[in-house]
Structures are given as C-alpha cells and as structure tokens.
Amino acid sequence: MTSPMDATDEVIEICRDLLRIDTTNTGDLDTSAGERVAAEYVAEKLSEVGFQPAIHESAPGRASVVARFEGEDPSRDALLIHGHLDVVPADASEWSVDPFGGEIKDGYLWGRGAVDMKDFDAMVLALVRQMKREGRKPPRDVVLAFVADEEAGSTYGAQYLVDEHPGYFEGATEAIGEVGGFSVSVGGDQRLYLIETAQKGIDWLRLHAKGRPGHGSMINDDNAVTALAEAVARVGRYKFPVVLTPTVRAFLEQVSQILGIEFDLDDPEQAVGKIGPIAMIIGATLRNTANPTRLAAGYKDNVIPGRASATIDCRTLPGQSEIFEEELRRIVGPDIELEYIQRQPALETTFDGALVEAMRAALRAEDPGALPVPYMLSGGTDAKQFAKLGIRCFGFAPMLLPADLNFGALFHGIDERVPVEGLQFGVRVLDRFLQQS
Ligand SMILES: [Zn+2]
Image (cartoon, rainbow, N blue to C red; front, side, top):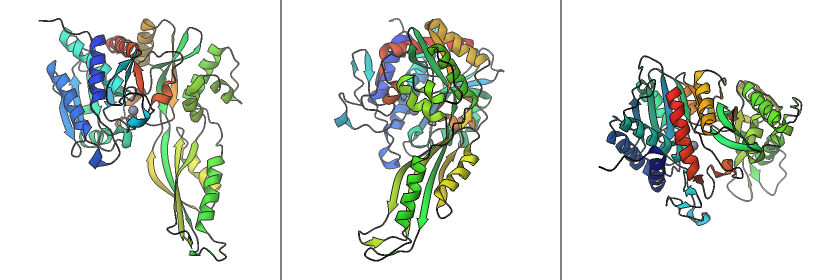
C-alpha cells in the first residue's frame, strides 16, 4: 500500500479537482448545474475516509453536503465550518488560462473559485481526511457544510439548510467561513491577518418615481425620468457620515500603530489610505454606502413614461439600518417611493474568546510575523444565514499571500488564482487551529 497523501499535498489535488468542476452560478436555475457534481465529489471524498455525508438538493441540481465530525467531547458546543461550492461566471475570452482548467503556473493554481472559495473547501477536505486517516478527532464536534448558491443570495444553499434542516447545526455556537484570515502586508516583515468579525448589512432598494406620461414633444414639468435621475444623482454623490463600529475602530488603531501614525478619530480615512488595495473594502466599512446600480424607464424614444425606477445597492453598518433609511428618505425627497428588494442584517461579534485565541496562536505558529486583526467585510456571505441560528460567525480561511498580490481584486476577478504555498500554509494553520478549538 502506498503511504497516504499528506493534507498539504492533497489540498492541491482537491482544489484542482474542484476548480475543474464548473459550478457557475448565474442566479438562474436552468444554467446552474455543476453544484450537484461538486457536491457528489465532496461527499465521495468524505465517505472514503469514513464520514457519513448527506447531500441535500433544494431544487434540481442545487446540492449541498453536510457531515458531522465527532469530537473528543461531543457534549461541548459544536463548531461549524462552512464553504460554498458555487462560483460566479467567468468569461474565458478575458482570461489568460482556461478558467475551469485548474492549471498550475508560476506558483499559483488558477481558476474561477481559486480564492472564492474552492481553496478553503479543499483545505478543509484535505485536513479532515488526514485527521480521519490518522484517527485524530477534533476536541469538539465539527459540522462541515459545503453549500450551493452563495453567489446568488444563498437561497438554494445555506438558507435552505438553515430553514429546512436546522437539525444539522444542533449545538453549533461558532463558525468559520470565507473572506478572512488572509495576510495583508503593510510594513516590512509584519503581516496583518484580517479576521472577519463583522459584515455590513445588505439593503437593496428600488426607487420609484411617478410623473405625468405624455408626448416627448410637449411641455412636461412632471417627468418621472427627470425626477428619478435627480434623486439617483443625489444618492450616488452623497457621502454618508463616518460611524466607527468597535471592529473598524480596533482595526484602524492596530494599523495606525504598525504604520507608526497617530490614529486620528476625525480623519480615519488617513489610515485607510495607507493599507494598499484592501482599502477598497475597509474604506467602505467606515460608513453606510449607497451605489446606484440599475435604471429602468420608458419604452419608446418619444414617449414620456409615467414611471421610472432605479436600484440602489446599499450596505449598512451594524445597528445603522433604520437610521440609514431615514437619511435616504431625506436625500431622495418625499416624491420618491422606496421599496426593499433585499434586506439582510449586518453582523458584528467581538474579537476575543478561546476561538479567537486559537486563530491567533495558529497563525503565529506558522508565521511569526503574523498580526491577527479583526475587520469588517463590506459585503455579505453565508454567515448571514448561519447567524440566524444564533451562531457566532467568523471569516477565517487562513492564507499567506505574497506582499504585492491584490487579493481583493481576485474575488470574482479575471485570472483568479491562489498561491500553491498559500494553500499549504492554510492547511497547516487550520490543523493547529482545529486542535485548539
Ligand atoms: Zn465566496
């Protein structure tokens, strides 16, 4: 018998396999097929070493996998480790490699999903497989969830499991998942590791303007398109006030300290400006934001329509949703109607406790220059669904990155890729973390 593969080798193989399964989630049920294949692959990898995974389909092809890894002390609260199997579409003509080829080149594994988030799926699978082979158990029960549909709102994945099969998460009080735990180089040999302890709320709103329809050649002082355009422009140009939540404040204080600059509460953007490309995310967590994304009005060039509408992608800080709505109503004015098309609350937890200590220790053991810091994600993840069960969610998918890599741009980006060594680093950190969790 050949000796079993080590998890740090197997992670590359598994990640590669997963990248080669096209799990494009278009948001349309007819064109999202690969999740079932990926779920079967994951279930097979788990069964092979003695897990008893369950596959659940919320709709044809929309499959998620759940398994429980019994711990040394099953009476303790469980830890949830979750990842999604779907990816956003990739236009092959824009890429320098086949987005579903799983190519290894220049020290990177390339493909759609390489950082979002088949990398973490593979890390978890490789690690739990090795643990099983070695007869090792985590200190407490671990619930493993590999889900569909994160990229189109979680309806057919995490939300379905949480609503229809909450029993799988029985006893789980804490969770780790995507978009956290990665390194950001800010000064010399020190690397911040951004652990996600908060994420903004999602408040997608539609603005509706009504007016007097009529012929485009005539005088019309009640034009819905004009009214809507004015409101949209006001919203788009508006800068909401800075509100520092405990997470963002802690992050900025730490960054300022490392950079040797005085943290100025009145000018937090100064510190944000010095952290490189990740400022795109961090900068958006200083305040509520509202970005116009869609416009809809009219059906003919010479007809003034009676209605016009626009979609605004709003992201709100923890505790700010209502204040934000009031402010937005004031900005658009009394004649514009507001309609929520998506509303998911923000999340925020504290950066403390045994689980956070386990993250810190694991990172420092593998990277002595590691400075773990809490941060807030400007977007949302499946954590929003699991948080509904009272689970305290963290973004912790450990990854050591080259200093010059613009990691944030790779999410949903062209030529998405993950450093092979980063994957292996991640497995080692996860292993240490899990032993202490
Ligand atoms: Zn993701």
